[in-house]
Image 1 (cartoon, helix red, strand yellow):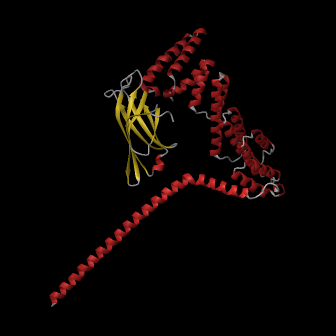
Image 2 (image 1 turned 90 degrees about the horizontal axis):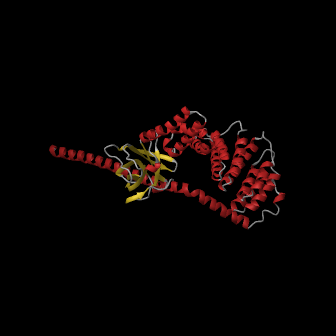
Image 3 (image 1 turned 180 degrees about the vertical axis):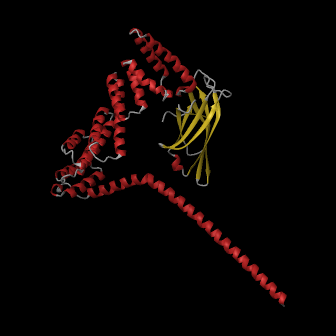
Length: 452
């Protein structure tokens, strides 16, 4: 009897343990299921959020336009508008602008400028922007010039913004000199503010630099190199460390004054030799040497001629030029693991020059728009033991494995791979870009895309 009771007790103890194990298992399974569902919902929410980021603005504008068009179609808001107050005029102007009726928006904003409270210039700004949108540039200029109180902060902001938009319009129409004038006006007024936003300040300067460079390019095409040099110098004033502007000045001065051209060229040789046209610089050095011979300065003439030889030696040892190398993409693999995408590529380098290349590394930059996501460097992929022979010699199977995980296909739409080659890390030469496809791609020869 006692033994039977002990057996029953033991069976009860085992049953309790089993129940406890089952209970723990149930909790763990429930937790895992919950975590999985939560992850799925989070992923779905993330996808929807990304979709909304891309389409919400466009949808919102379309919806606002549709609603505004319905309102103005069923109401006469203009005939008695001159009797209304400033606030009503502004709201009516906003409504017609949203509906796409810029002429009526212009009229409403014009009436608002007549009743604008002292020190408030939002109606002047909106009127100016509507005029610019209709390409009524002379009228826009008159509105900007119609008020002048340099001590009023609201007016300063109005004239800054209006001139920036006007400059953008002129630039998009390839009227670069007028764009320069508008941006200079924006810069003048914005400089009057005691507290300036660094981003806005830089934005105006970038616009000025771009407009001056574009204006200089037009001058060069028409043979006005002196004017081009003047515009480039003004661009350099706003961006003194811009090596590309210095290079343009070196080229422009090649005919105007070879000695000045050399003064711009020489510092660039130690900074961006891979972007310098060595033959062009050599011709400038010859011109300068001939000038020195005429002037009886044989020492300087000898220096310029020696410079040509030293430049060739320097380039051979340290520099690779874009025209020397081409690249093809042999394969592009996108591996999907759960909700992530992994990127792998393989490439072939082609020697387009007349010299064997015996020292070269390659760099592959994965970027999303302008943002760099990852850099993969293949050091010494070309060596003396594995040279890149002249006139079409190839080196195959340069395999690139990116560690970056891409979460959605939408993110892949803006991804590019920029390819650089170099002999020394200081002088990297860009040779092309590849658009990242949305699916795995295999090909025996996909040539490098044009400069993007």
